[in-house]
Length: 233
Image: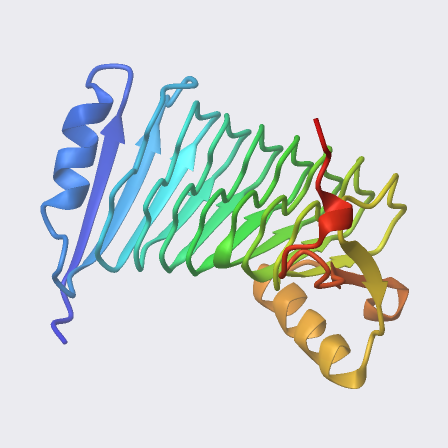
């Protein structure tokens, strides 16, 4: 492993996102330790997408759609709010949103850790496939919809239809759940689950009492076809 640290400041007021992403992706597949500070993001879309290297990217401000999409290995921090699809399809690494996140945060993520220190809107963790998501506040409706693997931690409240049609995602909620989705039930919180939850909160650097959380997951009634679930026309 090479020990190369490259520090750069990139100002999106005078340059475009395409150039930034090209520079970030130049080191894809290497072990170089990139250090980037991105100023004036001003809600632009797809910032820091497609990184496949060890990098620390700090974005000072609000970002638009699909920031940090497809991230692999990088540690990306957004000091502001994030638009739809932040960390979509992330493979590994860590993405932290210091503010709030819009719809489908962490959608289809295969791995890594997404931390949202504020609130997240609808469909947080939709179709998640192994990513861990920790939300410091509350989330909107249909969190973890069709989620297949990974964990979704919600330190505030959850909206309607939490865990609708969920597979094996483990959902931890400290606050109130407005309603559960199809095939989602409350499950026993064992010592192993408390330990797992504590580890996720520690990685996310969020202070919360693990004893106040409840766990939700699949009742596994949708795994096989059931005539009672079909509507006849």
